[in-house]
Length: 420
Ligand code: LLP
Image 1: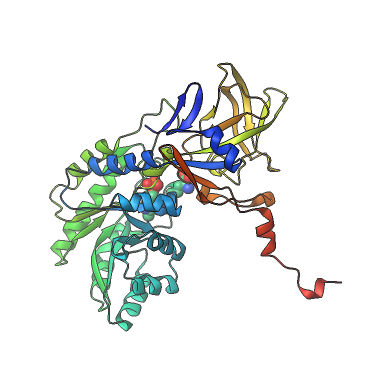
Image 2: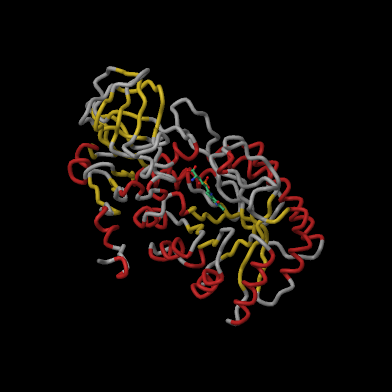
């Protein structure tokens, strides 16, 4: 459920008509609902209410906008970060360093050192050497780095290949069968406080059964580690819960997920960590766009909108579906392709889709664009960086400016030897 509804035939975000935002900020623009972010934060937490010790670390990569982070920080969420840049954002949003989990398969030595200096609460190690380096950096500072070892459970998450992370040949985690020996070697190092294990098998997961298989493997590993004399106090279960992109998509709810987790982790006696991203932000945002042309096509017309693959990459990258809806629908329908202005055939949001009838100058939205939308934007074709707006009740604010092509151009220069 979200807060993008029609009132008197016009699409609103909470109490603000989207046309008002388009008039004030221009298009394309991302629009986020504070009420939906808060609601999702609450529903996810409530879904896990049956578990004893829970730590929630919002996966910043889904939507790292500072204002979005602030909304979630106020709901008691920590952060899962995967780069120095994300770490800086989480801290800037007021998230305590101790509530930050540092994930990522390619943390640099400088990023690890920065994490230690900031007092990051947990480093999720992706390979043994990373643990050795982290321990060395920590020991040199008279510290013990809090960490978990991320394992790869070799489970097919049943999602798009590009967002699957838990198969043996994916780059993430250490092979689960090698984990006991590696854990023992790392736990013996002075500079590390190895508290447990972490997993994350993929994103937009729709099959809780596959996740439960992965969790069961982790449960057996935890038992084996304890049998070997290790103290295990934390297990990080990652993120990945999928969201509906179409009206008739049926996805497990946070409550379904919580029930499965309670069953899968019964008796573990650890603090469980979660890293939800999409399930919090996905349906809290839309990409608002204006139709530039309706161009006749051979089979169907092309609706050319002013948003493009550089603003919302998911359809081009994963063939992802985003519902398209007119801001002020007439009631008529049309069959059309929807495409952006970028000079690639891949800059196509939909082919042969049944949509609200639109004409040039009309406003429309791509729904479920709050996660992995603005954050994946680029400036391809020398387009600007898309701005972001946050709505709260009847007010709204620009929470990320449109970065104009001129600003991007200003960071480039021609070396003097090319000057005439
Ligand atoms: N934790 C880790 C270690 C992750 O790698 C991810 C996502 C998450 C948590 C959050 O997963 P979520 O709850 O959002 O599913 N750009 C792609 C999604 C990439 C996800 C990468 N990792 C998309 O647009 O579908």
